[in-house]
Amino acid sequence: MTDQNFQKLETEIKLLMKISQQLKESNDHLSKKNTSLLKENSELSNTIEETKLKIIKVIKKIKEQS
Image 1 (cartoon, rainbow, N blue to C red):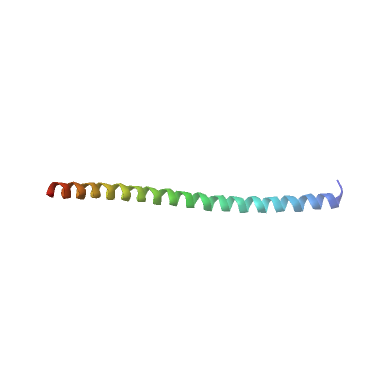
Image 2: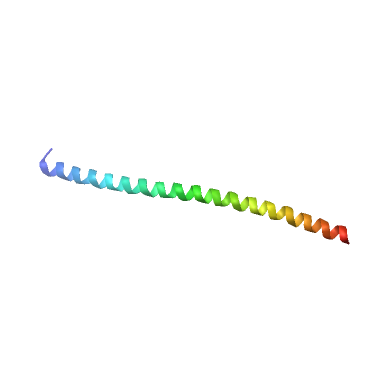
């Protein structure tokens, strides 16, 4: 392998390493974001369920008063 070919290969490897690091960072960020969204979704689901139960109670009281 000539020096020129070796240098070319070395440059490509460095570029691939840089891209790999960027992908890792991006993946880490997306993973954290996903975890955050899952938690937020769970909280929203709980809130919706609680609200649903309260609405059912209100409707029941209204029906009982009629």
